[in-house]
Structures are given as C-alpha cells and as structure tokens.
Image (cartoon, rainbow, N blue to C red; front, top):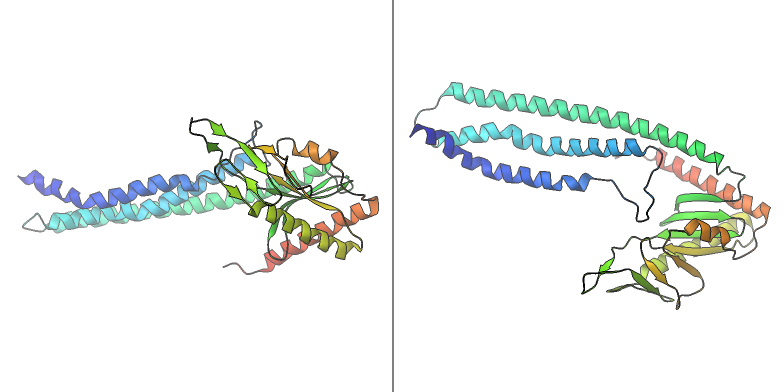
Length: 302
C-alpha cells in the first residue's frame, strides 16, 4: 500500500514531538510574574511593561527552543521515507530541504523580532523606573525623616532593605515560605519564634535569624565607622502570609508577618537618633549605593 510509505516515517517524528511537548511544559519557568501574599495587588512603576517583557522573554524561549525542532522535522521525515521506498525522488528531497530552509528563515526572523522587542521594552521599563523613582521624591524627599534603601550591598552579602527613621535604623530581611498543610487538609500558618530558630509546623530554621543578625552587625559597625558615633540598628524579619508567635522570641529581632510593617516601623523606637546623625546615615548609604552602581557598570559584561 503506497499510503504506508508516507505514514510509517511519522514514527521518526515522535521523539521530536516529545521534545516539543517538554519545551511547552517548561514555558512556565519563564513566567516571572509574582503575586502579593497580602490582599493588595502588586503595582509598581512599569508593571504593565514588566508583563509585556515577561511575554517577550517567553516568546524568545519558545522560538529559540522549538525552532530547531520544527525546522529539522521535514528532513527527519524525509530520511524516514528513505527506508520505505525503493527509488529516491530527488524532487521530493528538494521540497523537504526547501521547507526546512523556509522554517529556519521564519524562526530566525521571529528571534530577531523578539530580540528587538525585548530591547525596546527594557529601554521603556528603565525610563519608567527612572521617572517613578524621581516621582517618589514627592512622598519621600531626601530631607524626609523616613528613607528606604533596597538591596543594600555589604562586603559579602546583600541586605534586603534598610529603613532609616527618626528613631533608629532597621535592617529588614524578607523570607518566603510556603504554608504547611495539616493532616485534615487545612493550612497551618503559625510560626513560633525562639531566640535562635523559627519553628514552622513541620520544620525549623535558624538561618533567617542568623542572616538578620549578620546584617545588623555589619550595618551597625559600618555606620559607626562612617558616622563616628554608634548608630542604633535593629533587625526585622518579615514572613509574609504567616501568623507570628513571639512569646519566646529574643528582643533583638522583631519577627513580623509584614502586612502592617510600615505602621510598626513608624511606631517603633529603639534608640536616640538626632537630626545630624539621621541625615549623615542617609547620605553615606546613598553614597555607597552610587559607588556600588558605578562599580557594577564598570565591570565588563560576560
């Protein structure tokens, strides 16, 4: 039966179809969208552009991974045909080669389109972030008594956030942990805080508290060297989505769920901080942020 000569070579395409299915399944790894653990949705400057950029990277991944598979499919099918026919038809082989060439050109154009789209979106996002950062000065000018620094680099690690208030300086670390499920199927969302560890429903951890204390120690020593006087620094560990039991907690670290963190920091006072030292702390942290940014930009890209 002549139709079998065209049907049986499809067997050789099954492994390629399996690889294509795996690529489609892995597409979710390129979904960079995040959702707030609190009730309020996340909405930062450039949020719409972030979503479009995520879609562009997903398209780049699909075209880059599926392109070679789809482009080689006609040639693989043609080689399978060689096993089931007695006489080779070079016109048919030319058609397979032409089809593969067209597919290569098509995916190449799609990759170029994705590359140009990503460049435009990244430029647009950078501009929106720059304008948004400048607009934040309306509600957080440099002379404002409250100032927040994100991703503050130390000598060997990064502090998630540093908050400067009129009453002291706070090192804020954030840890995301999935809520536990009990034997009855209900969520277990209470964590007990002890001096050296966090007791979650099914496990315990020491590193988050250690990392927070490490950040407090580094920042207090660094600020004392730069300001010339001791600066009160306290650690805060945020566990979004969890209920916190602080009955056995140590007094040096405040462990919170994070949903009312801003209110807690404005009400918390742990040491005197006069205006001169307050402004000095902000200036030295701004200077370090600028120096680290210049250092990062001066490093050659790999």
